[in-house]
Length: 422
Image (cartoon, rainbow, N blue to C red; front, side):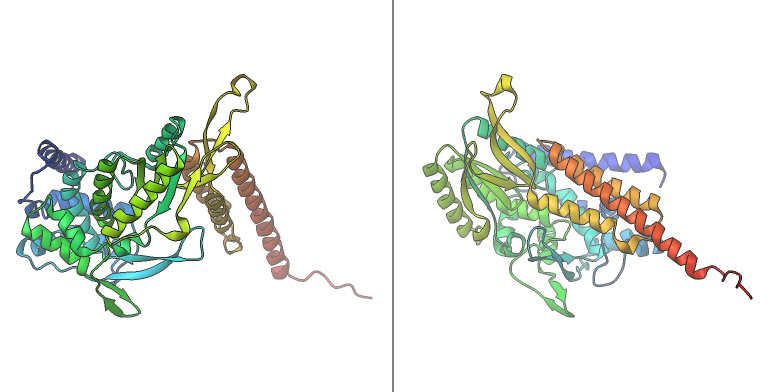
């Protein structure tokens, strides 16, 4: 498709989203009933494909990859999906279940990988319904939302600590994505959407199940991590928590998906907030993770907390001219530093001895730019220096080993020299 045509189609999709958002914002009680036909619109499916293609990702249980789709025809796939959605014959495949290491712990996180075709449909459904729920979501929610970031959430901590809210409830929701009950989630969706075909489509996504060790398991709970639409559905369900918290006004809630903190003025408020949070989550079929739940008092020389990869601590300025100023400082947490060192070690490992040095440097710089781009907000100079030194040392060691290996190979394959004779 020519570039101008693609731009025009993208503009139509953007205008559709804006129209849905404005309609939902203007009437908080409106329930939308004509949405399914928009999911299988060609321009919406094309935008969904671009999103899936950009994220790449592994194949699902059908073993079809992004490259396979591109080789066999994107237009063909989108046409088939549009026809199946239109006549109601579309059925999602079970997702492929894998387990990946959980950063900072010995646990492994379950990841569900839908087939490429199912990721496209999920992305199309998300394009259509996300603006409706975005109109309702509250300012305390930051994760997986357009034009909101982890740094926005972190800034709230700085602002509230400055205002004296330095008793902090720190927790995350245990097994959140796997524990959300389907009935409760569908009820939350139906507060805004009554299009029966679209509701059936979403319910089918939830009930498609996962395949593990050759067996498909279907459950009555969970919006598995790995699905394109899962973060949005989790936010739709957890919006109930945000909404109920707003009416309680017991501390400032900051939620990034299933990670959250509550900023309070004193210990009693923090204890009340933790009790209220536990009760509200229990009413939703969820619970805080005990190992990560605690109350922290941010004081100079006192406790600290980790949130969204940063270590937060209340400190006093070192500048003699501003020693009277104390503030909430942050820098990469110990776990974040270890993950960075581990990644640098992977990128400069012995299995890359025969790689071109230029490629290794390019990969290393790409990682370091991304890591620095996230952690540059805060007080991270010392940590940046540590990671740069580690990367320099690892790269120097790799180059030295590569040169040594090539010399050894050259010696083994060199012809024998002349033999001395009497």
